[in-house]
Length: 370
Ligand code: NAD
Image (cartoon, rainbow, N blue to C red; front, top):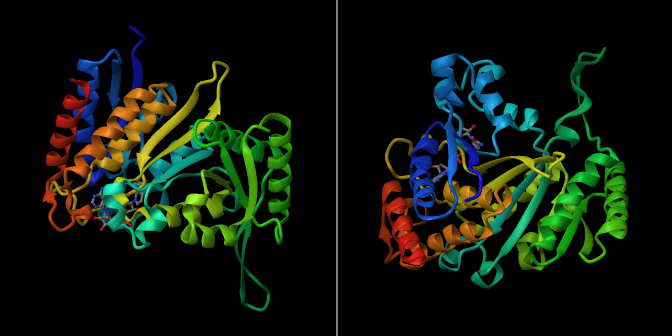
């Protein structure tokens, strides 16, 4: 049997722990029934950590995150901490994790399950069968570039400055992730910037094209301006496979793409760091939704986004593509049978709680593995 896989689970706040409870049941299912076993540690983050340790994430949890094979994260955020200093906010936990783990590549799949086509605001024929991956550069660009800040000018008016900055190594490493991902999908990358008006865009396009010519000629590469990409995502999203873009455009385009699917409670994500000498990357997996304080503690949350994040973890960190596919298949079967949490409820479907959705997934896993 292969060595145990190390996983750090950080449930966080609000619906984070509720969704994670269902994922833990699936993890136990894998532990019991299949050849893969997990060494699991669990830690506090966000408001849960603030309440106990007066910090959104302790150094000990941070150390665990740096030492584990993969982190599975729930969500952080609690309105009780809305009016505290920035470094005391629950959300600082995820920012520190991203920064100290060097998670520069953010993978956001936008997949439309056939059973949920009606949840999208777009026409069924536009989104049905959609399966695209937005790859966003996460640690560079205008959110971090210097100089930045607001200054008061001699005449009393103010001036705000942010700096968009990218270097060739930063562009190359994200482009490399895009090409590698595409090879495991349908082999197409669309690189997105604004080379028509931005110097970083010119450098981005040149660098991606050069890497492509040198190492990834087998992958089909196209380039697109970010504003056009926003239009194309709404007009004909199925033309894309992997979209790779910078931090700012990726922020916008990945949110836009997630809404093509119409259901926040269904969408997972992964954030990856640079490979070490053995080729292993630091990695954190999380649903794209937040802590949803409006429904927290009511057993109403849809746990599928967190569960599908665990499936991504199996695929990208543990190379267990078959087990990941099993989870995705179980989720699909549950939806096909009309089982729905409140957020994706449709006429004629059966409404279930968070726990009920966990029950339904486990039942399908039993059937699939029988
Ligand atoms: P949110 O994603 O928490 O909720 C938005 C809406 O979607 C709410 O109505 C919520 O009930 C619903 N929703 C979200 N996930 C759901 C699920 N799994 N099942 C059913 N319904 C779901 O976003 P928000 O309300 O803007 O933020 C709430 C808190 O979460 C804030 O403190 C915010 O800072 C934090 N947040 C954290 C993360 C993170 O941990 N990475 C991400 C986004 C927001």
